[in-house]
Image (cartoon, rainbow, N blue to C red; front, side):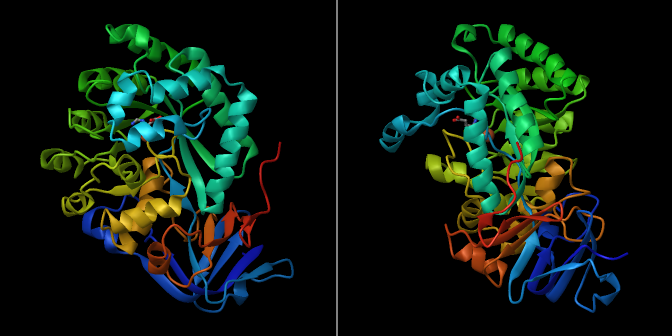
Length: 423
Ligand code: NIG
Ligand code: FE
């Protein structure tokens, strides 16, 4: 088979090892690293990777891209964001800086509720254009697949509006967007004293969402003062009955049983986990649930970081994601999230690579097609203006991404978007 694109003379190509299951514990320290490498691509799929001669993949139609001296990784996968929302929350920044806790701002009707108000008022076009800007920032930082959640509507119309906008963006923008319905993100004020009324509404929203194919996953915010473990179990088991895969925001501030819910229901991921207990780590050491850690949120909230080293010691499979949202992680800079994973989570460069590619892909049920540079995988590739991965993690808060290839085509070239939204 001949290639339509060959990336050659690659200074250093790094990739997770091919695996049919997420990479856990000590295994996260293993990657493949090739010097002076090539990648051959045909019809958006990788057909060969190696260091030797690529003559057998050449034809007169083959195009070439020279990556002399440069670092190459799989496309990065940001597996937890709230990318579609209206407005921003700089008005709460001062309160936050004075030390008012995140949950107190939420209780006063601010926080998620202030974004809900703006998102309800916004037109689809406004939401679309704001998220489009964010997606363009993300691809510039090497992100080729992103997950995005609803949850700034808390009523059927607005939740569906968010998900429809996301679906259109997925169709029009080269990035892959995996959609999650998170109607149970906060409790609307009128239901504070009777959560069940709202949770029943959330369940009935699922039927419409399923019908319109608007989401793959359902998620809930299991947290002290938000939704309890038994409420989470209720919502997520109803989601499973309807054929959704599930995720859970849990142990961000307090450990109230969300991890056990994730384990019992076989969630694809449990996310945040800053307050995870040793016992819960043991639960997650078996089963399919990826432990998704979000260091940008800890950074921005001046909060604890997830005990990532202990999690690896206990054989968990970690993913790292940005949690991009207007309240607790207002930045699309995924490389900065990875800087924090090194500095604060104390993950090694190899562990970070696995966490931001293959494991993130598994948390989105894409682990057998995305996140690895090997024959048969989708050709999502990042080329950096750097010659090694530790350098990218060390030289922090800088965008080292030079070129991004999505499905075998350049979408970023020399740090500029060359193939964007096609509306
Ligand atoms: O993942 N924790 C709950 N939800 C988001 C924050 C949303 C917001 O503050 O707007 C999170 O951090
Ligand atoms: Fe989140």
